[in-house]
Amino acid sequence: MIIPSQMYIDGAWVDASDGAVTEVINPADETVVHTVPVATEADLERALAAADRAWKAWREVDAWTRSAKLRAAADWLRAHREEIADVLTDEQGKTSGECLGEIGAAADQFDWYADEARRIYGRVIDAHSRNNRLLVIRQSVGPVAAFSPWNFPALLTSRKMASAIAAGCSIIVKPPVEAPGTALYLARACEAAEIPPGVVNMVTGKSSFISRHLIASDIIRKVSLTGSVPIGREMLHQCADGIKAVSMELGGHAPVLVFEDADVEAAAEICARGKCRNNGQVCIAASRFFVQESVAERYIEKFVAVVKAQKMGCGKDPGTDVGPLANRRRLETTEALVADALAKGAHLRCGGKRPEGFDKGFWYEPTVLTGMDHTMRIMREEPFCPVAPIATFSTLEDGLEKANATEFGLAGYVFTKSTRTALLASEGIEAGMIGVNTILLATAEIPFGGVKHSGYGREGGSEGILDYTVAKHINIQL
Image (cartoon, rainbow, N blue to C red):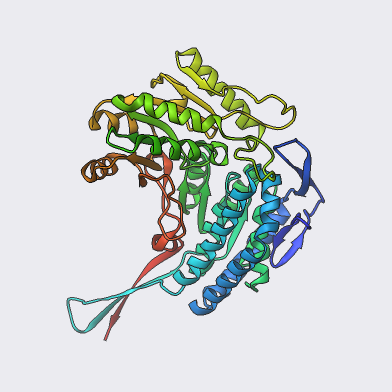
């Protein structure tokens, strides 16, 4: 197995022009997985020129041809899913089962947009006069600069690539420094599908340098980011200077409302297992748990039991439920959030430390905290870690007030058997996506995105391709 370890620019696999590389670290044991190039200004200029030239030809390619090539890329990813998943585990730490699921979901994005490429609709509008014909068509926005995160380096990168390619755009992707090899497999898939040189480009290296250079270029017409609020705010300032089209998915801090009429034990098990998925490093992870007072202890008891049963270990071990955190920053932030909560009166129900016997790597036990209040950082800041803070609420109105008491608005969850409660709570939570009696939201056919500081724009679904097009009005005088 040869991990992709070069940049993909203008249809060629290349090293940095000065030969510089950076190491990719295995979060389980801190060994070096492989190295990737550190892009120079000359490398970025080459990628920009390729994207500009390729877009002018690719936008003229018919939708059926674009569709066929996207489908071929999806097929290639599925055929190589085990190889890619193996690399993803080494780079990011999640379990083999989760990695296989992510590669399958990435392939689904290419599959979905193979269909959407043929469904970019315009319309004809009746004018004031029969001497005029009013048309609206949608055209590709142009070359895209896309920046993807490390928690789902295959899936979240594929959302940007597949929709851009389907719309007739070219794209320059900056993969995450923690898991670039996984994302580079997507470029391999596009190469195997014979997507023309320059339509897809991937550059690796220092994120801040690459983003500033790409966004400053007049060639780039659109920027897409999945990342943190501070990074998103900085990029928005940069995009403003060039009047760039922007899509931003800036993370979340999803509330869960568990009502007393819910199947409490089932809800607790669903939430506990979901919280441990990818070690809590999921932007739509349930991360603030509010349980109606009358059933709170039942919920907590079951939640703690499920969390304690999770086995930590190497992601490639088939018995592993929870792997390491992705990097040292996450470990240090997790420790700080737990320490802050405990200092302010939270109760530790399980976890709360690095596990014994894991001397190397970025490990932290799945943790449950109760007795939470809004003064604690973990109730206000996006945690991105395996720590579950559980609080209580009294009425629907009280629950909604607590659920909406953050700057985030990406996802939210409701557990109830009442249709009335489900609808009112779903409508009342300020978020772009809501799960009722489930925490599984992400799939290729739905629009993914948030409100408030969680950003704007949508990826996935029929809506996702529209962000890579512009509407053009044509008025024909007969």
